[in-house]
Length: 401
Image 1 (cartoon, rainbow, N blue to C red):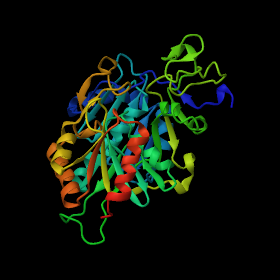
Image 2: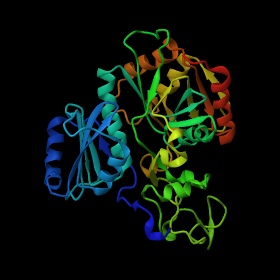
Image 3: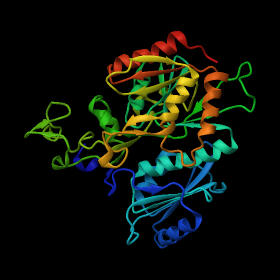
Image 4: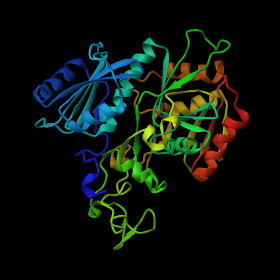
């Protein structure tokens, strides 16, 4: 593969931009009017996606966002009624990169930012608001995987290991991948499970929007990423954040990939991303679109908590409600990287947060459906040992509802 073959796009804003998730209707309409001239040009596209039954339409003049959007979601029919809208316009004069959501309209607006991660996450949050109110559905910021027919939902802040742990299950002979970022769990109208019923977590995305830095520890992924859609991969050695001397890498403590003759590096920038078709990794037989909810795993990363704790429903709900975490590169303003923050329910995508509803849903899961919950500390154990704990919980101590 030649250097020119990588399908990569570098965005001007390479992380989430400032925004207002509760923009009043008049202000939103005024901002939208500034974007409309750009969105009415022939090069703009309108694309409908079916996100767990909710039809969301993206209108954008960004070819990059349009391409990622089309590859990421299942397409909704052209005649499907739109339930929520996203407008994304670049080239709007006199406006800083910014994002706005208007609850009254179920509409979002992105100005002068093409970073796909925020667009994707807000689409999920918009669908969550509709499904929460109209379809008794809990939205979870978490990875999902299947092991020997049993499903696990791994909940944690961005960048703390959800994808890594779901991939370990995926790569097991008895494992399959569902999703690495989000799950919708719909509860039946009755309070608890009827005989034969299963609580199911569904994956709304066709592809995995992954941090490409995962390739550092799994070298075989380079070939997969090379044939995927990339965002903000580093193609120049002088732009690397981890150069060590003339030919070294400060992350791997080995030789720099550029000095090895490679044309790009997947871990030179901490928030570079890749959109990977799930079936492209280990084949379609290793992919599922839903899993039974047999176990919930929370992740934290510190140097003092126990490696594993089995949580009561109240303990699990309290940890989720508090959502304490360390801000990692790419997950917020750079000046906050490395500081402690709070992300209720470990879910920054909820655009219309209702804590009482979240408590209700998680209580139903843990008490009515009796789904066990454990918390693992990835700061005191290696990746493999944490994986073994998840497998042991699924293999030996969790029964199918």
